[in-house]
Length: 461
Image (cartoon, rainbow, N blue to C red; front, top):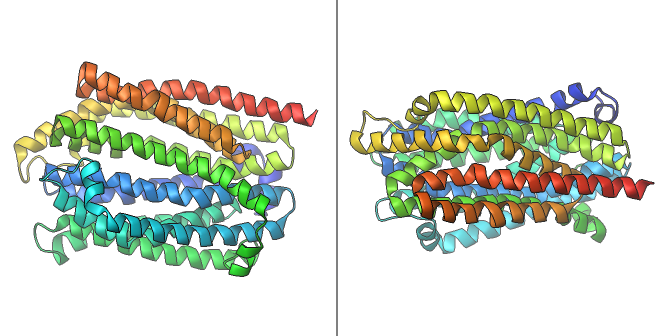
């Protein structure tokens, strides 16, 4: 399908379906990709291994934040430039985004490598978990950050130029490959007791191969789309375009970074209770990502359509796209609440065997996880509102409002609720902080979105 017609004329439900379906599938497979390590590690029945993967997930999320800097920042700008008919400028921005992502990935890898143990201890690693966490982080983060961040950035750029399916194939392919490589490395290649290291190697190999495919798809798409890998194009990027890229990319990265900071606080507070609470919270953080993955996929599919029509000044189509994506996301969230309330215990047992290893600690961990899931799942609809609103503001180039929303959502609401409710009600209060904080953040997000829409309408009059 012609990309211009898809963004500008195809009926909104169909256009959103075409753009969002591959991203939703990609998000779900990528979720499986990230969860599969925990699933197979859980087969060992070792709660301390599970706690270690909970600690390292915060560093994995930092790679997502860094990829958003150039992927969402550059991708959103490229979609707007396409809507304005500025293909040459879009090509320069794409090259600048890829080069910037490669550089920042290398610097992040170097920084974590130099301070790995202090970082792990800060994140809540104990004497029982630090060896497992170190072996995983060394391979996945220190060695594997560059291909991981590049793959995510390339996927964003492909998606925002209309090649959503190619982006999804690359990320999904890596996830599927990891499903097969994990048990191979964990239970057959690596010796007993080195299961975490085996999972890390499988993940790193999958990331590298996903990056290779996405580079191939990017180069092939560049024959038709305003995409480039040439350094000459990166140098030609205009200062105003670079400024616009960072105006959206920085808030998007900060949004993910603040989310990661909140997870760090959760881990620290959970670890202060005991390692089993930390492991239980880690299980829940993986399960609750199912509705989040679907909703983020919907929002990612929505973003280029909104950005294109915003630049083309087709306000009615833009608003219809925003409304349709929001309604679908809310429906998904409500369904997931019902399922999590009914199947909290079986879902938790999927991630930790209660028959292998230390059965007593595993049963306690599963009990914590089921309790936390039944509380935290009520955050899903308001999390959708937060994601949806943030993506809408990014699509319209309102980086300042996106940054303000990210800061208020996490720093003003969620993290203070976390410490307050944990102090008052213990681990139950810690779990309840998520729906409380996200609800307040969603109300503020809706206020900001309406303000952005009115500002544009006033400017157009």
